[in-house]
Image 1: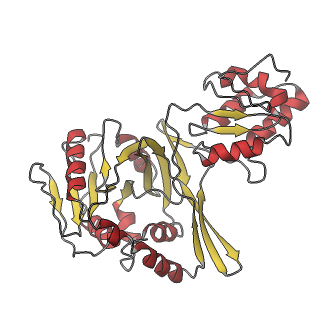
Image 2: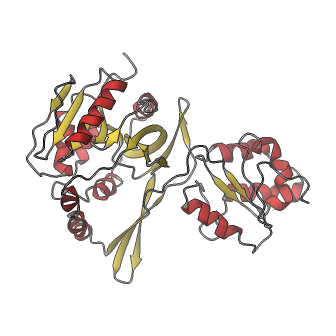
Image 3: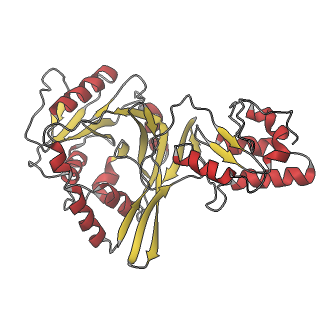
Length: 367
Protein backbone atom coordinates (compact mmCIF):
# COMPACT_ATOMS: atom_id res chain seq x y z
CA UNK A 1 0.00 0.00 0.00
CA UNK A 2 1.29 3.45 -0.89
CA UNK A 3 0.76 6.46 1.34
CA UNK A 4 -2.19 7.70 -0.75
CA UNK A 5 -3.98 4.40 -1.40
CA UNK A 6 -7.67 4.64 -0.58
CA UNK A 7 -7.90 8.33 -1.53
CA UNK A 8 -9.90 10.08 -4.26
CA UNK A 9 -10.07 13.82 -4.98
CA UNK A 10 -13.61 15.18 -5.25
CA UNK A 11 -14.23 18.58 -6.88
CA UNK A 12 -17.39 20.70 -7.04
CA UNK A 13 -17.66 23.27 -9.83
CA UNK A 14 -20.04 25.89 -11.20
CA UNK A 15 -19.41 27.98 -14.34
CA UNK A 16 -15.71 28.67 -13.79
CA UNK A 17 -14.08 26.43 -16.42
CA UNK A 18 -10.76 28.28 -16.36
CA UNK A 19 -10.47 27.72 -12.60
CA UNK A 20 -11.39 24.06 -12.94
CA UNK A 21 -8.80 23.48 -15.67
CA UNK A 22 -6.16 25.23 -13.54
CA UNK A 23 -7.00 23.07 -10.50
CA UNK A 24 -6.91 19.77 -12.40
CA UNK A 25 -3.62 20.75 -14.02
CA UNK A 26 -2.17 21.55 -10.59
CA UNK A 27 -3.41 18.23 -9.16
CA UNK A 28 -1.93 16.24 -12.02
CA UNK A 29 1.36 18.08 -11.61
CA UNK A 30 1.46 17.12 -7.94
CA UNK A 31 -0.42 13.80 -7.81
CA UNK A 32 -0.45 12.24 -11.29
CA UNK A 33 -2.01 8.95 -10.23
CA UNK A 34 -4.84 9.97 -7.89
CA UNK A 35 -8.37 9.44 -9.21
CA UNK A 36 -10.46 12.61 -9.57
CA UNK A 37 -14.25 12.86 -9.34
CA UNK A 38 -15.95 15.99 -10.68
CA UNK A 39 -19.47 17.23 -9.93
CA UNK A 40 -20.07 20.27 -12.17
CA UNK A 41 -23.56 21.76 -11.90
CA UNK A 42 -22.85 24.65 -14.25
CA UNK A 43 -23.40 24.93 -18.00
CA UNK A 44 -19.96 26.18 -19.03
CA UNK A 45 -17.91 22.98 -19.26
CA UNK A 46 -14.16 22.90 -18.87
CA UNK A 47 -11.87 21.15 -21.34
CA UNK A 48 -10.27 18.39 -19.27
CA UNK A 49 -9.37 16.15 -22.19
CA UNK A 50 -5.69 16.69 -21.60
CA UNK A 51 -5.70 14.87 -18.26
CA UNK A 52 -6.44 11.23 -17.52
CA UNK A 53 -8.23 9.76 -14.54
CA UNK A 54 -10.96 12.42 -14.30
CA UNK A 55 -14.45 10.96 -13.94
CA UNK A 56 -17.53 13.18 -14.18
CA UNK A 57 -20.44 12.52 -11.83
CA UNK A 58 -23.75 13.46 -13.45
CA UNK A 59 -25.68 16.15 -11.59
CA UNK A 60 -28.48 18.52 -12.61
CA UNK A 61 -27.73 22.07 -13.69
CA UNK A 62 -27.76 24.48 -10.74
CA UNK A 63 -28.52 21.69 -8.28
CA UNK A 64 -26.28 23.40 -5.73
CA UNK A 65 -23.24 22.58 -3.65
CA UNK A 66 -25.08 20.19 -1.33
CA UNK A 67 -26.34 17.96 -4.14
CA UNK A 68 -22.89 17.99 -5.78
CA UNK A 69 -21.16 16.91 -2.59
CA UNK A 70 -23.71 14.16 -1.93
CA UNK A 71 -23.18 12.90 -5.49
CA UNK A 72 -19.41 12.87 -5.01
CA UNK A 73 -19.68 10.92 -1.75
CA UNK A 74 -22.07 8.39 -3.30
CA UNK A 75 -19.78 7.85 -6.31
CA UNK A 76 -16.49 7.79 -4.41
CA UNK A 77 -14.93 4.30 -4.64
CA UNK A 78 -12.42 4.86 -1.83
CA UNK A 79 -12.60 5.14 1.95
CA UNK A 80 -11.38 8.74 1.95
CA UNK A 81 -11.98 11.72 -0.31
CA UNK A 82 -10.29 15.09 -0.63
CA UNK A 83 -13.00 17.76 -0.70
CA UNK A 84 -12.07 20.67 -2.97
CA UNK A 85 -13.64 23.49 -4.97
CA UNK A 86 -12.60 24.59 -8.42
CA UNK A 87 -10.92 27.85 -7.37
CA UNK A 88 -8.28 25.99 -5.34
CA UNK A 89 -4.75 25.37 -6.61
CA UNK A 90 -2.35 22.66 -5.45
CA UNK A 91 1.33 23.59 -5.36
CA UNK A 92 4.56 22.05 -4.12
CA UNK A 93 3.48 22.72 -0.52
CA UNK A 94 0.27 20.66 -0.87
CA UNK A 95 0.95 17.48 1.05
CA UNK A 96 -1.92 15.02 1.50
CA UNK A 97 -0.11 12.32 3.46
CA UNK A 98 0.01 14.10 6.87
CA UNK A 99 -3.74 14.75 7.06
CA UNK A 100 -4.55 11.32 5.63
CA UNK A 101 -2.38 9.65 8.27
CA UNK A 102 -4.30 11.44 11.04
CA UNK A 103 -7.78 10.51 9.82
CA UNK A 104 -6.67 6.94 9.17
CA UNK A 105 -5.43 6.67 12.75
CA UNK A 106 -8.54 8.26 14.29
CA UNK A 107 -11.54 5.97 13.65
CA UNK A 108 -14.20 8.45 14.79
CA UNK A 109 -12.81 11.37 12.76
CA UNK A 110 -15.17 12.27 9.93
CA UNK A 111 -13.08 15.04 8.41
CA UNK A 112 -9.76 16.77 8.86
CA UNK A 113 -9.66 20.22 7.31
CA UNK A 114 -6.69 22.16 6.06
CA UNK A 115 -5.51 25.74 5.69
CA UNK A 116 -5.63 27.99 2.65
CA UNK A 117 -3.39 30.70 1.30
CA UNK A 118 -5.33 33.62 -0.18
CA UNK A 119 -3.55 36.67 -1.56
CA UNK A 120 -0.30 35.53 0.12
CA UNK A 121 -2.01 35.37 3.51
CA UNK A 122 -2.49 32.12 5.41
CA UNK A 123 -5.96 31.30 6.69
CA UNK A 124 -6.23 28.69 9.43
CA UNK A 125 -9.87 27.81 10.07
CA UNK A 126 -10.91 25.74 13.09
CA UNK A 127 -14.22 26.70 14.72
CA UNK A 128 -16.52 25.49 17.49
CA UNK A 129 -20.20 26.22 17.83
CA UNK A 130 -21.80 28.06 20.73
CA UNK A 131 -25.58 28.50 20.89
CA UNK A 132 -26.72 31.31 23.17
CA UNK A 133 -30.00 32.98 24.08
CA UNK A 134 -30.42 36.54 22.82
CA UNK A 135 -33.42 38.88 23.21
CA UNK A 136 -34.91 37.87 19.86
CA UNK A 137 -34.35 34.11 20.29
CA UNK A 138 -31.22 31.97 19.92
CA UNK A 139 -28.00 32.93 18.22
CA UNK A 140 -25.46 30.44 16.89
CA UNK A 141 -21.85 31.59 17.08
CA UNK A 142 -18.87 30.03 15.32
CA UNK A 143 -15.84 30.84 17.47
CA UNK A 144 -12.14 29.95 17.12
CA UNK A 145 -11.60 26.47 18.55
CA UNK A 146 -8.38 27.15 20.45
CA UNK A 147 -7.32 24.55 22.96
CA UNK A 148 -4.27 22.30 22.91
CA UNK A 149 -2.93 20.69 19.76
CA UNK A 150 -2.98 16.92 19.33
CA UNK A 151 -0.14 14.99 17.74
CA UNK A 152 -0.57 11.82 15.68
CA UNK A 153 2.52 10.27 14.16
CA UNK A 154 4.31 13.61 14.33
CA UNK A 155 1.44 15.53 12.67
CA UNK A 156 -0.04 18.40 14.71
CA UNK A 157 -3.78 18.92 14.53
CA UNK A 158 -6.52 20.54 16.59
CA UNK A 159 -9.98 19.13 17.47
CA UNK A 160 -12.81 21.43 16.41
CA UNK A 161 -16.35 21.31 15.04
CA UNK A 162 -16.09 23.17 11.72
CA UNK A 163 -13.38 23.61 9.09
CA UNK A 164 -13.16 24.94 5.53
CA UNK A 165 -14.81 22.99 2.72
CA UNK A 166 -11.27 21.82 2.08
CA UNK A 167 -9.78 18.73 3.61
CA UNK A 168 -9.98 14.96 3.72
CA UNK A 169 -13.25 13.36 4.75
CA UNK A 170 -14.31 9.81 5.48
CA UNK A 171 -16.72 8.79 2.73
CA UNK A 172 -18.89 6.76 5.13
CA UNK A 173 -19.41 9.88 7.27
CA UNK A 174 -20.34 11.99 4.25
CA UNK A 175 -22.91 9.45 3.11
CA UNK A 176 -24.33 9.04 6.63
CA UNK A 177 -24.66 12.74 7.49
CA UNK A 178 -25.03 14.23 4.02
CA UNK A 179 -25.57 17.81 2.93
CA UNK A 180 -29.08 19.29 2.96
CA UNK A 181 -30.02 19.60 -0.71
CA UNK A 182 -32.58 22.29 0.14
CA UNK A 183 -29.53 24.48 0.71
CA UNK A 184 -27.88 25.10 -2.64
CA UNK A 185 -25.68 27.62 -0.87
CA UNK A 186 -25.14 28.49 2.83
CA UNK A 187 -24.84 24.73 3.30
CA UNK A 188 -21.52 24.84 5.11
CA UNK A 189 -22.60 25.68 8.66
CA UNK A 190 -25.65 23.42 8.48
CA UNK A 191 -23.54 20.39 7.58
CA UNK A 192 -21.00 20.87 10.36
CA UNK A 193 -23.63 21.91 12.92
CA UNK A 194 -25.49 18.65 12.32
CA UNK A 195 -22.23 16.71 12.24
CA UNK A 196 -21.40 18.07 15.72
CA UNK A 197 -24.50 16.31 17.06
CA UNK A 198 -23.21 12.90 15.93
CA UNK A 199 -20.38 10.71 17.19
CA UNK A 200 -18.15 11.85 14.32
CA UNK A 201 -15.33 14.23 15.18
CA UNK A 202 -13.56 16.93 13.16
CA UNK A 203 -9.99 18.19 13.19
CA UNK A 204 -7.83 20.82 11.53
CA UNK A 205 -4.18 20.71 10.55
CA UNK A 206 -2.12 23.48 9.01
CA UNK A 207 0.03 20.78 7.38
CA UNK A 208 -2.63 20.46 4.66
CA UNK A 209 -2.34 23.57 2.50
CA UNK A 210 -3.61 24.79 -0.86
CA UNK A 211 -3.96 28.16 -2.54
CA UNK A 212 -7.37 29.81 -2.84
CA UNK A 213 -7.34 31.83 -6.04
CA UNK A 214 -10.75 33.53 -6.02
CA UNK A 215 -12.21 34.43 -9.40
CA UNK A 216 -15.74 35.57 -10.23
CA UNK A 217 -16.17 35.87 -14.00
CA UNK A 218 -19.09 37.50 -15.81
CA UNK A 219 -22.32 37.11 -13.85
CA UNK A 220 -20.97 34.53 -11.38
CA UNK A 221 -21.54 36.94 -8.48
CA UNK A 222 -25.25 37.08 -9.28
CA UNK A 223 -25.58 33.38 -8.51
CA UNK A 224 -23.53 33.63 -5.33
CA UNK A 225 -25.76 36.42 -4.01
CA UNK A 226 -28.48 33.84 -3.45
CA UNK A 227 -26.61 32.68 -0.36
CA UNK A 228 -28.39 35.28 1.81
CA UNK A 229 -31.76 33.69 1.04
CA UNK A 230 -30.49 30.21 1.84
CA UNK A 231 -29.06 31.51 5.11
CA UNK A 232 -32.62 32.42 6.11
CA UNK A 233 -33.69 28.85 5.30
CA UNK A 234 -30.90 27.56 7.54
CA UNK A 235 -31.92 29.85 10.43
CA UNK A 236 -35.56 28.78 10.20
CA UNK A 237 -34.57 25.12 10.01
CA UNK A 238 -32.67 25.32 13.30
CA UNK A 239 -34.97 27.83 15.01
CA UNK A 240 -32.27 30.48 15.16
CA UNK A 241 -32.63 34.25 15.29
CA UNK A 242 -29.20 34.81 13.77
CA UNK A 243 -25.82 33.32 13.00
CA UNK A 244 -22.69 35.14 14.20
CA UNK A 245 -19.66 34.14 12.22
CA UNK A 246 -16.04 34.67 13.16
CA UNK A 247 -14.68 34.85 9.65
CA UNK A 248 -11.49 33.20 8.51
CA UNK A 249 -8.71 35.50 9.65
CA UNK A 250 -6.08 36.67 7.23
CA UNK A 251 -3.17 35.08 9.00
CA UNK A 252 0.23 36.77 9.01
CA UNK A 253 2.79 35.20 6.72
CA UNK A 254 4.58 32.22 8.15
CA UNK A 255 7.70 34.30 8.63
CA UNK A 256 5.94 36.37 11.33
CA UNK A 257 7.45 35.84 14.75
CA UNK A 258 5.35 34.90 17.76
CA UNK A 259 4.76 37.66 20.31
CA UNK A 260 5.04 37.73 24.10
CA UNK A 261 3.09 40.69 25.49
CA UNK A 262 4.25 42.00 28.86
CA UNK A 263 3.78 45.11 30.96
CA UNK A 264 2.49 46.31 34.28
CA UNK A 265 -1.21 45.87 34.99
CA UNK A 266 -3.70 48.25 33.33
CA UNK A 267 -1.13 49.40 30.76
CA UNK A 268 -3.01 48.30 27.65
CA UNK A 269 -1.55 44.82 27.24
CA UNK A 270 -5.01 43.24 26.94
CA UNK A 271 -5.88 45.55 24.05
CA UNK A 272 -2.57 44.78 22.35
CA UNK A 273 -3.16 41.04 22.69
CA UNK A 274 -6.68 41.25 21.30
CA UNK A 275 -5.51 43.35 18.37
CA UNK A 276 -2.82 40.80 17.53
CA UNK A 277 -5.35 37.99 17.82
CA UNK A 278 -7.68 39.84 15.43
CA UNK A 279 -4.78 40.12 13.00
CA UNK A 280 -4.40 36.36 13.00
CA UNK A 281 -1.90 35.56 15.76
CA UNK A 282 -3.08 32.42 17.54
CA UNK A 283 -3.96 33.09 21.19
CA UNK A 284 -4.69 29.49 22.15
CA UNK A 285 -7.00 29.08 25.16
CA UNK A 286 -6.73 32.75 26.18
CA UNK A 287 -9.58 33.83 28.46
CA UNK A 288 -12.15 36.37 27.29
CA UNK A 289 -11.70 38.81 30.17
CA UNK A 290 -7.96 39.43 30.15
CA UNK A 291 -6.80 37.63 26.97
CA UNK A 292 -4.39 35.60 29.12
CA UNK A 293 -3.32 32.02 28.56
CA UNK A 294 -4.48 30.33 31.81
CA UNK A 295 -1.71 27.74 31.79
CA UNK A 296 0.99 30.37 31.33
CA UNK A 297 -0.61 32.54 34.01
CA UNK A 298 -0.62 29.64 36.51
CA UNK A 299 3.02 28.87 35.77
CA UNK A 300 3.99 32.49 36.29
CA UNK A 301 2.08 32.64 39.57
CA UNK A 302 3.91 29.53 40.77
CA UNK A 303 7.25 30.95 39.64
CA UNK A 304 6.67 34.19 41.52
CA UNK A 305 5.83 32.27 44.69
CA UNK A 306 8.58 29.65 44.44
CA UNK A 307 11.26 31.47 42.44
CA UNK A 308 11.42 28.56 39.96
CA UNK A 309 9.66 28.08 36.62
CA UNK A 310 8.62 24.57 35.56
CA UNK A 311 10.30 24.67 32.13
CA UNK A 312 8.88 21.32 31.05
CA UNK A 313 5.28 22.46 31.49
CA UNK A 314 6.12 25.86 29.98
CA UNK A 315 7.55 24.17 26.89
CA UNK A 316 4.45 21.99 26.57
CA UNK A 317 2.21 25.08 26.54
CA UNK A 318 4.21 26.85 23.85
CA UNK A 319 4.56 23.76 21.67
CA UNK A 320 0.76 23.47 21.69
CA UNK A 321 0.44 26.92 20.13
CA UNK A 322 0.00 27.25 16.37
CA UNK A 323 2.51 29.74 14.99
CA UNK A 324 2.50 32.66 14.82
CA UNK A 325 1.12 32.93 18.35
CA UNK A 326 0.63 35.61 20.96
CA UNK A 327 0.92 35.03 24.72
CA UNK A 328 0.15 37.81 27.19
CA UNK A 329 0.62 37.97 30.94
CA UNK A 330 1.69 40.99 33.03
CA UNK A 331 3.53 38.56 35.31
CA UNK A 332 6.21 38.21 32.62
CA UNK A 333 7.57 41.48 34.08
CA UNK A 334 8.73 39.35 37.03
CA UNK A 335 9.40 35.99 35.35
CA UNK A 336 10.67 36.65 31.83
CA UNK A 337 14.28 35.77 32.64
CA UNK A 338 13.08 32.32 33.75
CA UNK A 339 11.44 31.77 30.32
CA UNK A 340 14.51 32.78 28.33
CA UNK A 341 15.97 29.24 27.90
CA UNK A 342 12.90 28.03 26.00
CA UNK A 343 11.78 31.29 24.37
CA UNK A 344 15.04 31.34 22.43
CA UNK A 345 13.62 28.55 20.28
CA UNK A 346 10.97 30.91 18.85
CA UNK A 347 12.80 34.26 19.09
CA UNK A 348 9.55 36.12 19.83
CA UNK A 349 8.92 39.82 19.67
CA UNK A 350 8.46 41.41 23.12
CA UNK A 351 6.10 44.40 23.22
CA UNK A 352 6.61 45.93 26.66
CA UNK A 353 4.71 48.59 28.60
CA UNK A 354 7.07 51.23 27.22
CA UNK A 355 6.20 50.25 23.66
CA UNK A 356 9.67 48.88 22.82
CA UNK A 357 10.11 45.89 20.55
CA UNK A 358 12.94 43.43 20.83
CA UNK A 359 13.75 40.17 19.13
CA UNK A 360 15.02 38.73 22.41
CA UNK A 361 14.38 39.21 26.11
CA UNK A 362 15.84 42.49 27.38
CA UNK A 363 17.74 41.49 30.49
CA UNK A 364 18.58 45.13 31.17
CA UNK A 365 14.94 45.78 32.10
CA UNK A 366 14.29 44.93 35.79
CA UNK A 367 12.20 41.77 35.99
